[in-house]
Length: 263
Ligand code: PEP
Image 1 (cartoon, protein in one colour):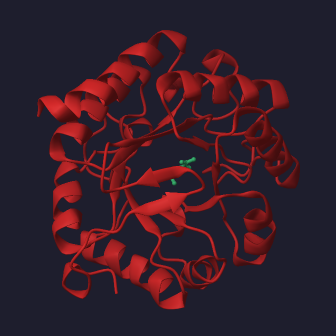
Image 2 (cartoon, rainbow, N blue to C red):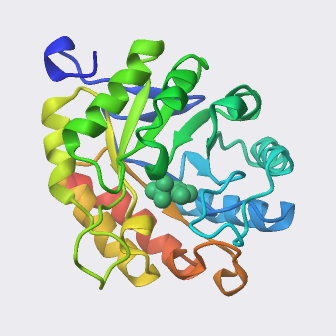
Image 3 (cartoon, rainbow, N blue to C red):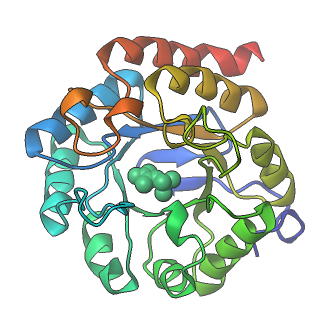
C-alpha cells in the first residue's frame, strides 16, 4: 500500500490547513515536551515566527529513565488544544500506548509514533484506525524496509495519510546523539509515495547542528523538517540542548524560503 508501485502520484498529507509533500518543504516546530501553558504558547509563537505550519509538542514522553519527566498527559493535551485555539496552528503529538489513542486523537490533528514504538504493531494498527494523519518516526535500530513495513501496518488499518520521519539511527558514532541517515530520505522517497521529513533535533541532539542538518535535509529533497524550539532551553524538562532559540528562527525561515528554489 505504501510502495511507489501501488501509487503513481506522490501522496500529499493534509493536516487541517497544512500540507506535507508535493510542494514547498513543510516546517513543524514546537517544544519537545509540553511543560506549562506559558512555555507552550511561547514556543508556538516561535514556531510561527520560523514559518511553521504545524505545532509539535509531547504530552506523553517516552523517556529512557523512569525517573525523568514523563509528560503532563491529558493536561498537556489540553494545553496544546488551547494553544492551537490561540495561534491557529494544528497539533502533532506523540501517542505511546494503544489504550490512549482515542484520548490523544480527541485533541490532536496528527498522531506521532516515536522511534521507540515503530514496531509496536498493536499501536500502529490503533493509530491507523483513528481517522487522523500519522507521523511515523523511523526506529533508531530499524532498516528502511522495516520502517516501510511499519507504515504498511498503519496503511492496512485504514489511512494512507502517513508522513515518514528520519530521525537518526544508532551507530558507533558518539559525536551526535544519533546518526542522521540522510540517504534514507532519498531511498524512502524512491521506494514509497509517502512524504518523508527529517528531524534534525533528535538526530543531532545539539542546537548548533539543527540548521546544518536542516540544510542537508532540504538539499536531499526532504518534504519538510520537524524541529524543537524552546523559549528557555536552560530550564527545559526534556532535551533542552537541542532546542532552537529566538535568534535561530529567522535563519531557519530564510533557509526554508530560499534554499529549495536555489537547488
Ligand atoms: C519526539 O519527537 O518528541 C521524540 C521523542 O522523538 P523520537 O521518537 O524520534 O526520539
